Length: 371
Image (cartoon, rainbow, N blue to C red):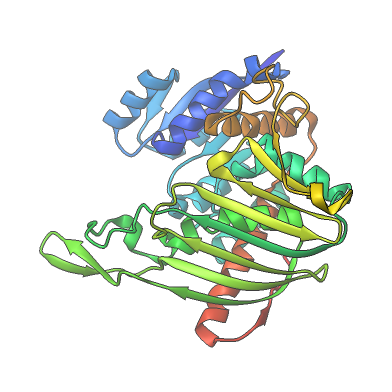
């Protein structure tokens, strides 16, 4: 067992999740590398000290550059706003330190391309944080598809729907300004990553991206909303199947609607993150009168479940997904081998997002360039 010093940039919502995961991962997975919480960086000395005390880091700083330069920091986790990702990652790679970066990879396709170039030039381990695809349920679905359990795939329907901005009376915030903070920049990367993992590359798409509530209350009156509320895409996958994806932050009643349905020639699969410990599987076999979707509760027989709990159906949660990510990052560092999803996988997501914007603007079907 060997310790590795971790520097964490950002102590907010995702920063806390990563701090907890780094503290727990060694005990959960008995990893050969054990994180040592060295430095946490925040936007002010007061917040850095508050996070340091709360999460158990040795030191805090208001300048991420100090974190990257610290010799006791051997790997960097980025959980700060996407506008900061590129500079931090480039500096960390230049300093010879592996990087885990929260999604999306930077604030633009250009950022993502530069970050991939820096990562691959360094030869260092790099990962991007798409946590939902790591549930035991979705890992199990990937296995089913790889085994051909439902035959040749003919159709995919995916969504990521939430309602945190469904009420038009909610005030203007940073979330309603700048394209990178819109629905396509914030929510869409998760279901796109899932779709690519389950279905493979997209050959072409037709997208429509819209703002539903064009103004919101501001301190002195109505303020314009300058990014998108929801989007939909028709898709043709490189493997030949058709598909559809819908993303929304104004889907009234939906809280964590990361969901998909996949049809094949021998069956079908359904999953919904609001019931994240269940997979619904239909097999087109046996008498018609007894066919139907079977609810499969995840348990120790499914990927990464047993490390958390020995009881079938007891379930895993959101924080457990982040712990699995931490295990994968430590595995990449310890083994020296790439693990999925890498920065290049994050670039593939950005490429699809950018193509969707171009399609929506031009009202055309467009090919998705390879990355």
